[in-house]
Image 1 (cartoon, rainbow, N blue to C red):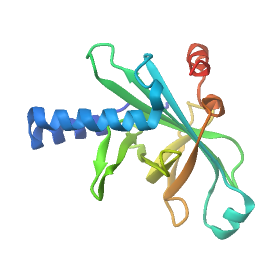
Image 2: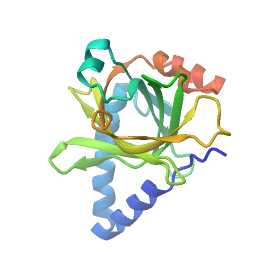
Image 3: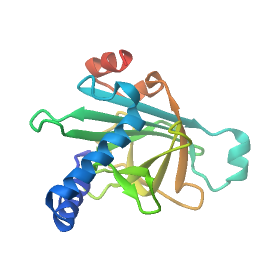
Image 4: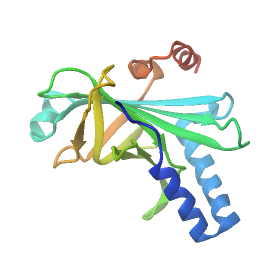
Length: 208
C-alpha cells in the first residue's frame, strides 16, 4: 500500500527550533517562510487558503546526448502552500512530483509534505524547503533560482510509483551522475494538472 504522509522533516524542524532556542528561532523561521513563499508563489500568496507553483522541464535530444547517464526524460513539480486550519498564521507546504523516463514507459509520480523554508548556508538569499515521502521514501530539496523563474531540485533518492497505481510497491529514483540536480522552469499551473486528481482542487488551481 502506498505510504506518503509526512514525518521526518517536521520532526527535524521541531528539534532544530528547540535547540537554537525558542522565540528567536521561530521568528527567523517565520521571516524565512514569508520571504520564500512570496518568491515561490508571487503576489497572490496568502490571499486564498491554498497557493500553487508549477515547474516543468522536458529534456531535449541535445541535452540528453550530453548526459547519457540521465534516466529522467521529463519532470514536473507542483508546490502547494495551505493555511493551517488550527494554528493561525502557520502555512503547511507539500509537493507532488511527476516523472517520465528515457527507457521505462509510463508516467510516474511521488508526493509528500515539506519542512518550513530555511536559508542555505552559503547565502541568506538562497532558501529552500526539504520535502519527504514517508516510510523511508526519501525526498527532495527545492531551491528557487534564476530570479525565481526556475527551481533546482536536488535528490539522493526518492520513492516513486506508476501513476494511479498506489497498490504497487514502487521503486527508488536515485541521484546518479546525471540525476542528482534538476533545473525546472516556472510554468502555468495548468501544466501541473496531471498531478491532481481531486476535481475541487483542479478548479481552485484554474482560478489562480
